[in-house]
Image 1: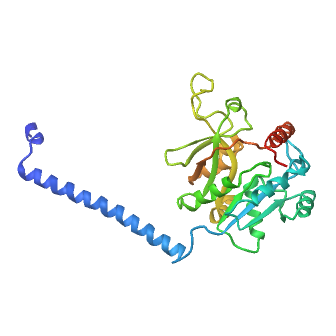
Image 2 (image 1 turned 60 degrees about the horizontal axis):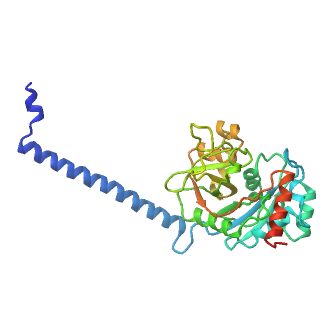
Image 3 (image 1 turned 30 degrees about the horizontal axis):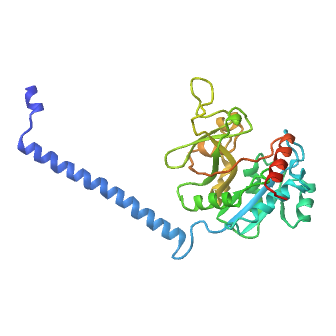
Length: 302
């Protein structure tokens, strides 16, 4: 065979190639259009003519008495009120929540919550984390909800706007089953394993969470110029996914980091992340109580 004939092209072959490229372009456009039409039809069938996507929202505050780092943490006094009460009061200010309940396995916590007017769902001691406790709680609720917001009971200064933000993020991202929030990480918290770090992609979906500093550069030190992100812990789930979550087996990364959200990512589900301007004021240890109280006095919060 003459090698020259392979490289040279006749007008006939050029015409044929151009025709084939045009055909391929139409095929690609047809596939994309088909997917878009199918998605639109699917959304219409799912939502109906007037329903809002994932419109019914319940906030659940998981609370357990036993804790390896801080026994009885939900009941610790924060300027004269139990921490669980302060969290509940802040959550009540969110506009997207149709209902709020406390889910606990401890009667002392339940009694305390009922005393200040909170609805309580009793859950079992076998729940491994807050997500599993939320799952058990929704099974016992009288009404059905599309979205469940897991509100950390150790965040007495949780911003209602953050609750509303993650709910709206999940409502606007039908390909995600989970949403959460991050804020800027303080440099002094870079290597604190109690401060969970997060990295996201360019579309705002979570890539990874870690107790270690991520990303980690080869100098082994935190870069003061890099915008590290701190996970705020609050998260919301599509209720249909929440019913699947307990059936998913624990994953290697989840077990190694002891972070429940990694099981979501390792199983290929998408998680939407919003960035907010918020100082993290979670109570992880008894020493954190003094810091919270000092901040509340500074802000005249009673």
